[in-house]
Length: 79
Image 1 (cartoon, rainbow, N blue to C red):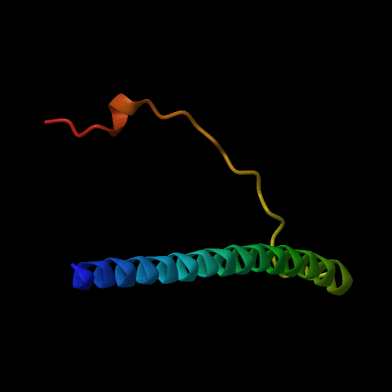
Image 2 (tube, rainbow, N blue to C red):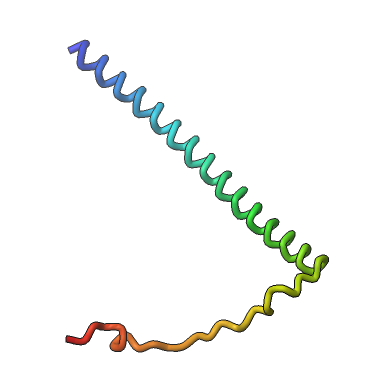
């Protein structure tokens, strides 16, 4: 009977350790995700600033994206 209590207690301790590890990993993932988006935003801002300072005319001006409605029936394969 004592052996079963030791196994149960060991399992509980391992489960708590795994839970703490998972929480730490989730917290770190949230930090890294936030840092990624901040860096991406800053990169875009700096890229725009460099374009205005350099006045790069080698690229054509961006054209407006054309959006069109495509009915679902047209996407289905016809036998």
